[in-house]
Amino acid sequence: MPADDTPLGESWALSPDSRRPLPELIEQKLREQIIGGALKAGDRLPTEPELARKLDVARSSLRTALQRLQLQGIVEVRRGLGWYVRRTDLAAVEEHLEGRLAARQFSQTDLLEVRIALETTAASLAAVRAESGEVDELAKLNLRYQRASVDDVQEVIESDEEFHSALVRASHNELLEHMYQALVPGLQDCKRHAHPSREVHSRSAGEHEQVVWFLRRQDEVGAKSAMTRHLLGLYNDITDDDAIPKATHNTYVAVTDNPIWGRQR
Image (cartoon, rainbow, N blue to C red; front, side, top):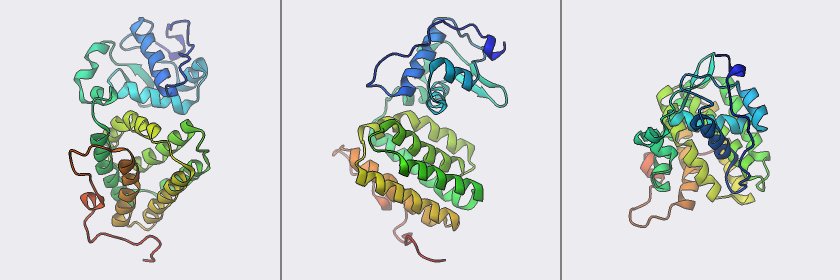
């Protein structure tokens, strides 16, 4: 059925809950359409521009919501065709790993430790696989993050996530990217709870720049080490489980692998 002809519920007004991030409100609204029977398994959703217009939201927030539902197996994207409803049995979602991730059933410590393992590997792969245009795009995305006002929490989180997601894509490892995207909803919650100061925001932008610097030089050890130092900042800020020792830089990078930022090759 054509996207624009799909029968949908009349009300697209989002819940006026300012305490919840916009992607969660969009996710809730799309769930309501599915539960209410307006969208059935196999139906094609309206195009992203059409959905964004109906919901009166930015496409970046809409895409995050769709990715949340995709990770839960509720919708799927078919290349060149658009988004489709995959399943309507929402009660079974949390039986799957991705459903558990989406439902925040893991601790922040577990989540961040896996995130560091995945993203530092992605940085190493990107150093040897990324095309020059992809590295240029990372530099542009970091500029957007750098220019974001720390008072605009949503923009800080979205611009930061755009940078990290682009880095993972530049690894050209489809499975690694899929695993990383499964963590994204929980990561956004972590970042929201650790709202950065201007000093931390500036430092984070500088650390992004370091990663890009090593990528341009195809230095996989440097990229991995720089990304490890960057991600450990958030990890150390919000993990408070004293029952187990915390991870350190040496957990992810060999002691001898300590490249110097700004060195010449």
